[in-house]
Amino acid sequence: MNENRTSSPPAKRNPVTVERTSDRELVVTRTFNAPARLVFDAWTKPELFRRWWVPQSMDMTLHSLEMNARTGGSYRLDFGDGMVFFDTYLEVTPHSRIVWTNDEGGQDSSVTTVTFEESDGTTLLTMTEVYPSTEALDEAGTGAADATHETFGQLDDLLTQLLA
Image (tube, rainbow, N blue to C red; front, side):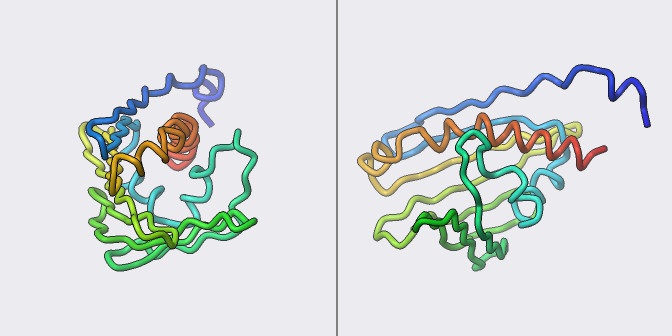
């Protein structure tokens, strides 16, 4: 065990940027101090995803998680009490891009695209959410995007553990 590593202060977190880029689009960006392969795995492997996705401050429990992260595959997150999120992966390109729909049984669905760009061992993650209408984005607000500050911090913690 490296004595210096355990006694040093935690690394400073990289900032999260949340920007409404149009009347239907929200873009979140964040750099992670880990290779794209590892960040991508945290988004596509259920055993890793469940360790960081739910903001701890929200006091929510992910009761079940089904994830088949491949083009044409599906996902389902069940938080109980009828709070279920599910839909389809439109594109999964290992280590660089994931695109999925967020239908949850409604008629209008948003589309989320996450890209992973690696440079010198760090990964720039860009998450773009495109909503079917201005009203849909207004209704969604920035709550989920705002929660990424916490969940991306949790992802940082997981990546640090995986790199150790």
